[in-house]
Length: 154
Image (cartoon, rainbow, N blue to C red; front, top):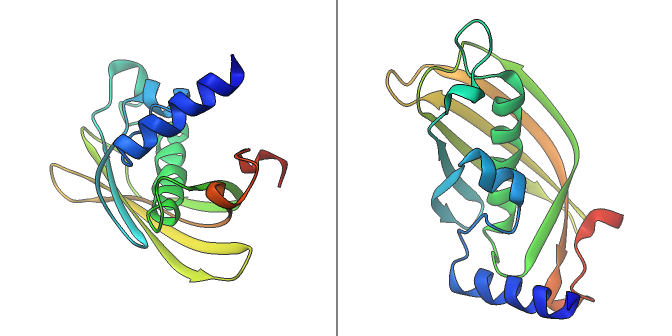
């Protein structure tokens, strides 16, 4: 049964490399991959009422998740069907409140054989105000050259 689920997962990914359905939490948030090219990704999120904090801004945890995903997708973009990654470390700075639709841009800035450095920014779609920035280190695994297991044991 587990092998059939893995085959279904890889078939879905081969069909739509921008799909985030394989990450239930991200799919639940409603994050959309709008653009992907090698080393870069642009994502968006239309926040739901439950995504806001008591001050009326998009909750910091949602913002940090979006930054993390933008960087990871930027790395995956080199081979979105076969690359899988995990965050090793991440540092984020909050600049202004997230209001309305959020646009996240992630970029790969350096690569070694095992670790990749990435950066991301989020802007409010309505006024282009900078909401947050992050830098992070990611470990990627090529699933086509492995046992098809995710990198969670990295």
